[in-house]
Structure formats: C-alpha cells, structure tokens
Length: 47
Length: 541
Image (tube, rainbow over all chains, first blue to last red):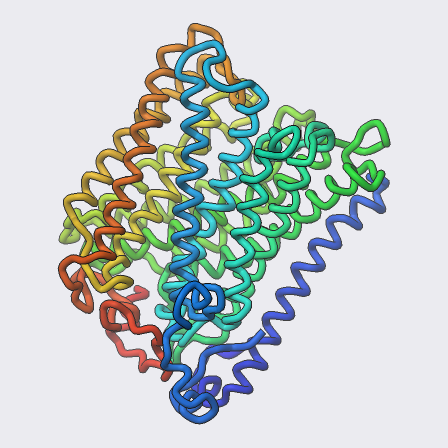
C-alpha cells in the first residue's frame, strides 16, 4: 500500500502487484468471517 | 483481477491507442465494459429501476392499508410484497445507488484513472440483475415469494417454499457483489490516490466509502453465513435454528442483526459523504471540522458492530444486556451529533443558495435528524418494549432510510448530473421534485408515528378501525410520494436529451478534482496522475 502513487503509475506491474496483494488480503478476511460464523455455531452445538 | 489504469505512456506502449477508445458499440459494450463511469451509470440506472419496482410494491402495501379489512390482496401476498419491498429497496436500490456514485466519483476524486480491479468491477455489477430476477421471479413460483420480512427469521424461513430458496440465493449473490465492490473501493482508495492526496486530504465522500467498504467486508459474510445455515437447515438436515433439533431461532436473530445494524450505517455513511460535498458547495464555505468528521465516521462504523441487540430487547436477553445495548446505542448519537453540528456550522454565515441539490441536502438533514431522534427514543429499552413491532418503528426507519439515503442520493444526482451528462438539468422541475417529495414523504410517514404510539402493529394487512384515518392519510402521502419520483425520471431523460451546456464547474462553491475535468467528463480521465494543487487540497477542508 502506498500513499504516493507516483511510483505506482510509473510502474504498472508494481501497481498491479500492490493492488492484488490488498485485494487478496481483503478477500481472505471476508472468507474467514464467513467460515467463522458457521464453524462457531457448529462447534457450539447449534447444528 | 487486473488493474486497468493504463498510464499515458503505457497506453501508447503496450496497447496502442486502445485505452483511448470508448466502449464497444451496442449492448455488448455495456456487458463487457470495464470503465468505471460506464459501470457507475449502470449501477445508477439499475438502482432506479429497482427503486420503482420496490416502490410499486410499497403502493400495493399502502393501497391495502388505505382502509381496514382486506381490499385487494391476500394476507400471504401482502407479506410477500412487504418482504420483497424491503429486500429490493435495501439491496437492489439504495446500496447499488451509492455504489454507482462510488464508481463514478471515487476515481475522479482521488485522481485515479479507474477502479483498481476493473474487470471485477464489471462482474460486481452484472451479478445484480440475476439476483433481482431471482427476487422478483420468486413471486411466480409455487407458494410465492418469501413472506418473512427482510429479516428472514426462522422458524418461518425454515418452513417456507421455493421462494425462500430463491431469496437466499439472491442474498448470496448480492453479498458477493457487495464484497467485490468493497474490495475494489478499498484498494482504489488505499493504492491509487494521486501524489499528494494523503488520506487526511481526501474528499469526505471517499472517507465515508472507505469506512463503509470495511463495514461491508466485515458484515456481509455474516449475513451470507446466516442464510447458508438457513439453507442447510431447510435442505440438509441441520438444526442451527430449528428448536426441534436442538437449535435456537433466537441465534439467527443475533447473527442477522450483527450484520443488520452495520448495514444501517452501510446505507447511511455514503449518504453522509454526499451531503458533506453538497452543503459546503452551496454555502460557499469549506466543510467545517473535517478531522472531526473523519473520526466521527470511523466511530460510527466501529460502534455499529456493538449495538445489534437493540433490535431484540423483547427476546428475553438479560437486564444487564438490555442496559448495555441501550447505552451503547445512545452512544452513537455522539458522533452522529458531531456530523449534524458540523453540517449546520458549515452553513453558518455562508452565502447560501438553494438549488435542487442543496434543497435535497437540507431535506436530508432535517428529516434524518427526526429519524435519528426517534431512534434514540427506540433505543431506550423501557420505551422500546412498548413500541417494538409497531408502526412507530416503521416511521423511524423510513425517516432514516428514505429521507436519509434517498434524499442524499437525489442531492448527489442533481449535484453531479451536469458533470456526468455535460448539460444542466431543469432546475424548476428539480425543485418541483423536491417539494412534492418532502411534502408527500411527511404526509406518508409522520402519521405512522401516531399509529405506532397508539399501538398499531407492523406487518399486518388489516387493522382495528380506530387506526383508519391516519392510515388513509399515510396512503395518500405514499401514492403522492411514489408518483413524485417519476418527476426525477423526467428530469434525467430531459437532461440526457438536451439542455443548456454545463460549464466545467457549474456550482461556484464546489471544490475537488472532479470539478477540474471538462463537462461531460471524458471517457478516460487522469491517465497521468494529476498534480494536486493547493486549490485541490482545499476541497477536503
């Protein structure tokens, strides 16, 4: 993550890599929340 | 996933002049476009169509409630209308409308050439029509659509027919779309700001969306988990929420509202962002208290995760729990009060003019504050136990949702329409739209406070005769409000067809990078990062 986009727009690959990194982290977080909600109820005997 | 922000050099290097073309011709162009402006336009049109569909359903509800007794529809169909009206308005109209604004405005506001993941952006949008078809199409399957209310509470939701499965799948799809949209927005804001556009210099709309996108990513998977468990209870023999199998229906309520309350702010925060642009522009002043606004947004976002059980005071939660949730809920009034104070202070001694965007922003400010105030009333446990599931609650959340989100969306649409189409809209028609909307809105919803205080329950197609008069008034207001919205359609179509050419900056008090671009905005913007000048920076303060 960069607060300064000069280096990013001059180097598209770096920009893409940075974007992909943030995107994957956020997607993993969302997936973890989804799985945790269900597992949490499952292990507490809900199912 | 791929960034589409070709730089000027890159565009001429790797892609030739491809980056300077518009979208492909015809319908296929709209299916395949990765341009943030195209996708923003599609989001906005989709949300308006869904708004009309959901609005038509609300008129079925209000038509039935015009008089006591059963007039036009069966109770089952009434419940289905009520459920679909809510789901369509929340997930199909309000949320996509603000995602449309985000798509259009955020890249231009931060000086980025497009959204970070342009292809995923296309997919985020095109997931919406199938979800809308699932929701509306469920009316035509055996047993009809889900009739549970948007909360989808078990045991009813475990027992209903195919329409319920379609609603569950629709919620899954809408959730995926929202999560992808949020990932895009966060990445764009964090990674693609122009040089010099630091976080604390960002326009307020970007700040509100940054917090909203985090709320979405944290809360949407919770709803997805809840409806997945509903689905397995319905078809795969589990008993998460089935008491007969050892499950707990109240557990669903906890999970649903752990999503549901942040959802309220997912809708409200971008609305705050829009108003934070419109009020300074028509006050010819900078936004008062920028830093405190940012902290207030973050505080509202954070606290929204800790107040969910104020929707569940009567489910038997312990007294200490009721007290905690009451105090935590009341606490939200502090950052919200900071925002209202700052908007009013922005106007203080400003050179105010009252064009349509400003009128809608002021309508938002007044009516949202009324809705916030009744929210405080409902937050008090002892009062809520009396008012739970009455029309007072219906009045409260319509003041927050319609007057809050919808009026703000209209403020934003009128504000940025000249920039989008390159033409000024019909100001007189815009003002007619505003005045009819605000009058009929209050005629429709203010009497519902009295109905609720008198004890009329919500979600019923029939009622005791003592409630007749206020219901008749409310229905007249609802029909007036509904038809008033067609004026907006007229304004937009007229604007697309022709009109006076808009200057680069049609509002002399407006500040920000987007107002440095020509009207209409070129198909590709900021392929080279803009140089942020002092004038631009002033936009954020």
